[in-house]
Length: 119
Image 1 (tube, rainbow, N blue to C red):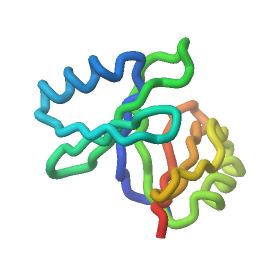
Image 2 (cartoon, rainbow, N blue to C red; image 1 turned 45 degrees about the horizontal axis):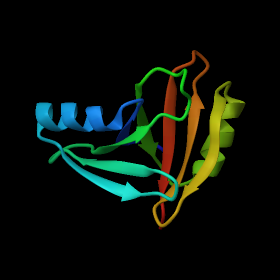
Image 3 (cartoon, rainbow, N blue to C red; image 1 turned 180 degrees about the vertical axis):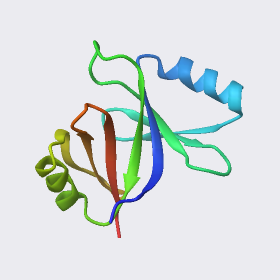
Image 4 (tube, rainbow, N blue to C red; image 1 turned 90 degrees about the horizontal axis):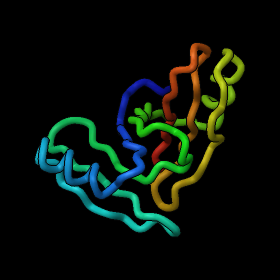
């Protein structure tokens, strides 16, 4: 069952600027993690839900935050979301050694991610 917000991710056109802004504003700790052809910045916030920062992939998309909800079966939950009128923005995608995710738009267009940690 999916039910808890577990990760929040900033998709931005200026990762260096975002890291400086949020690091200075909130004293967040940043750690760059190589992910093949790009770096993903893990954000440690202390207490509470952590997140990440990455370069947005669509140049014409605005910078935005994406919240992930954790569960135990991302594949079937992605299919169920589509059955219920949601749109699959990104199908189930594996993150090596970490888990799998998908991105869904609800019937009104609000976008969120589903996350299944590797067991």
